[in-house]
Image (cartoon, rainbow, N blue to C red; front, side, top):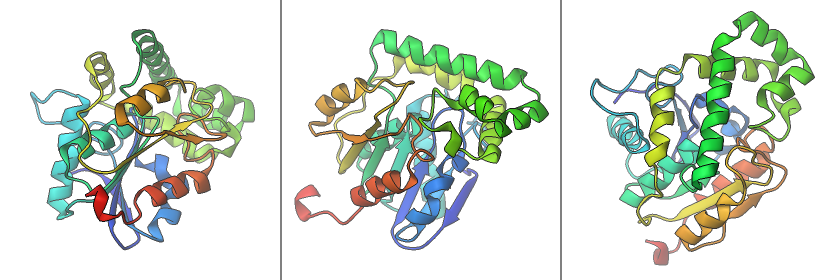
Length: 264
């Protein structure tokens, strides 16, 4: 499947997958750091950013979106890439690792490890953010993004340090959220989302210390599922790339470094 994407650097392929309602630009703060070591390909999922929607009749689920990423990699001729994702993208990274078609997977605050109450909280917050984005005139959104208080109001539930978001990045993210044709159907599918099958590829899970959307205690369930310790992203929120680009890039680079044969 053809998807919109940004490609930089050289080396082993690394696919970056954003969260629900976002777009590939979420990865801008870490792109250049990652591109020093990888052929980095940041994608817009189907129905998000500038990518077309899924074909008629294909449901918007994390699994079908993972299928689209697999199809996109095949179209580019990219085999067994490393993959890193945030939120919904983190779940997709783990799903691809469960299929065994990737070299490594890094999941930052992945979806799917919530309790029922935590799921309802996350869906409620995301629906409210979507409604706000759709009802806000783009010119007003731009002015709010320029104002520190406006940035905090718009993004405080997703990032720990709204001031580190550039006004342009926040305005573009608001527009992407408003225009995501796949948002509502994907969000509705979260009610049936369960952790993926056990991974066949090496994985790393990291969680924002100050994640206010997918609360940090969900990392305990992720650790139990994976059988390994979950890394803590100190000082970071749910979308950590702008909170601490060096830390996030370091986690991804460490996770995608060559592994011993015992991991294979």
